[in-house]
Amino acid sequence: MQREELADFLRRRREAIRPADVGISDGPRRRTAGLRREEVAMLAGMSVDYVVRLEQGRSSQPSTQLLVALARTLRLSDDERDHLFHLAGHRPPPADGVARPARAGLTRLLDLLGDTPALVLSDLGRCWRRTGRRCC
Image (cartoon, rainbow, N blue to C red; front, top):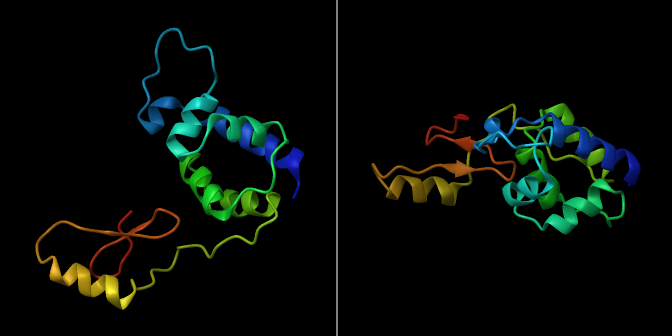
């Protein structure tokens, strides 16, 4: 794991995200460029303390689930996400550029729901339509 490089990458990406891009009000008294650590923690579903430790290079190796949450929160491209995983000492998950069908059980469940709105999310937060094509 490359702690200092990971810390720098996360800090730079956090500062590059505009609060309005993630649905957070950009108030007149805001002094922080980009998102605050507290906002990243809230959006990624982790503690503020852990975000601070990651950005200061004082954390243990983050889990893949945590990295997926950070990649989604920081709106990383597939290349940036792969870079994040490499810095954290993990193999990146496969990119979702090619649509793969949902598991048979999920497909059956969606079929049973009939006209009820539903979607299937990948571990990277990508969604699929009932047809198996990516929708977002």
